[in-house]
Length: 190
DNA sequence: GTTAAGATCTGCT
DNA sequence: GCAGATCTTAACG
Image 1: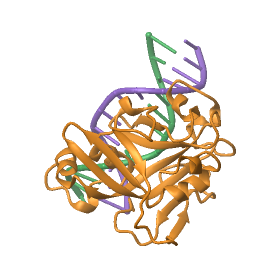
Image 2 (image 1 turned 180 degrees about the vertical axis):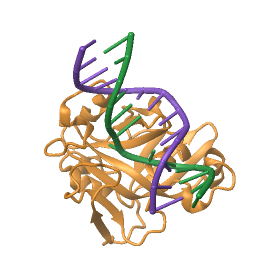
Image 3 (image 1 turned 135 degrees about the horizontal axis):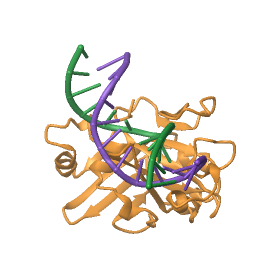
Image 4 (image 1 turned 90 degrees about the vertical axis):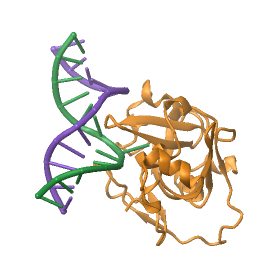
């Protein structure tokens, strides 16, 4: 993964993360997928961003250096996984909303429940974290290294068809198109 | 110490 | 398509 691309503009980073591999190694084995859906959370003019009201205990990882993980717990049941972006100390991040499962399908199915369809394995922030066994122990983890890391996809088409839409599940800043998806992909959350 | 709200998912209608 | 589950976090007293 080209970490430098994450350190400047968060919106740019959200677009560049599309199509990249996300890999996760555990004792049970390796799982991987291609990122097909992201959302940008900005530090300025974005009340939906956890960092918009300053640094707190929960969002401290968001103020770390670009390329680290920000993982948090929501709605009593689910984790969300973000990649910290922008200059260090800025408090911006990109939420990974969905991936297309590539390797370790059986392991993901085991974690998500038997009989879970391929399209349902990681098509949403909470589902993705279940399938990849992401929890708070990975909060602040440097995504250049194992057991959770990003990798460029060499087989990617030169010009990816990217579409931007309003973000999902956030009540503010609906006029901003900060969600980015790979057009027509089957594994989007919706 | 108490309370209200949330970057969601699943199951049922 | 819609409401409920469920609990951590942060704001307030």
